[in-house]
Image (cartoon, rainbow over all chains, first blue to last red):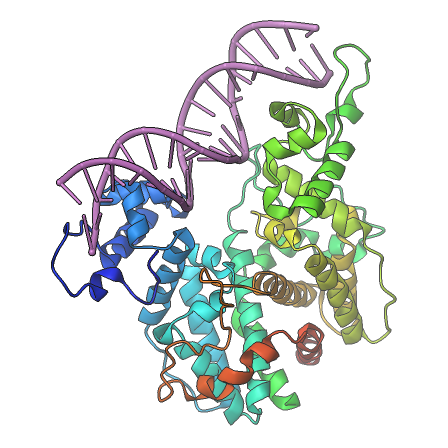
Length: 228
Length: 228
DNA sequence: ACCTGAACACCGTTCAAGT
DNA sequence: ACCTGAACACCGTTCAAGT
């Protein structure tokens, strides 16, 4: 039952016993390849083993469980992102960092699945935590106490996770009848009770695909730094 | 392959054929009972059939698929919520509605799972859309155009979904070793690179359980209505 | 018109036995 | 020290046959 933080292959000092057929790095690479080729939902322990040409149960010598694999992938992914150039204004620095993280998560939709794994915030490793540091530092530079900076981070994080999750699940959705599901709420719309919904019914689907994330965090970040 | 909007039992005009052993309403009630008693993750098509005392495959005459069941439950749930008293100030009206919806979703954590179902926004029915109407109306009352009100709603919605999802998955999390996962990021913390993270490491877990949702939407709502 | 069992095509995970 | 097949305990869904 290996832990994420202590890979067995690295810990093994001696050279006795049966030689390993795979490694953490190889597993991660295979998982990524599998997702890119066949899609996120095809990433199963069994398929991953086939991809690697090993028995599926062998994977449990390298990973605690499937969730462990997901966290490992997220950490590797977030850690590898190129850090953006940061502006000097604290609020704008938050916006820049948040947009970078959002773009990162949005580009790999499977990341959205991992975001909802139990307690994942405490399972980021140092390389993946740079963005937490940057947001906290910017909040403090903007006049927040350390405690307030944590709350600023949490707000930004909730908004980001929500945006990524909702949008990754709403693009190009089609109903079982093959027709695209109408995001405009026009189905059985009671116009007297839902007057404002009716007023935007025709334009909703157009407005809903617009990328308003940056505007959202901007309003958020400036609003909170002013109040702090 | 029945659709959510046209229950078969209701549509059937004649009285020929084998009598039904169950109904939409009974299925929904049984599902809720199952969740309340055994937990969200125990809600499977097979267990639900056992709960109802019918064959599992029979359920497919009343539901298109499992996702359909989830949406049906969400709609029933959101539609039944007592509408809160609304203040006159537009921004505060948004806060009140948003808090009510958040409380609702947070109280039934399984709702969080449904929120990530493909295209669920377009699958709310009229009874569940009152909160959309209220937020759009408040935004317009606050000076937004109809188009802008949609963007206000989207921002609030992303934030709400994120808050509910993250928080429903972060409470009382324990690692596989039985120790609670430390949300304070203290594991292998490089204090030189992550100075601000280190500064809040000790208080993070205390701050993270605080309910700051209302403060978040408030900053958001006021900020956006000012800019619009 | 509605219900059913059998079957299909899968899952994640454990564990004793093997090299 | 590491790998493996068999097995366990499940899933959601389809479909021909039955009442």
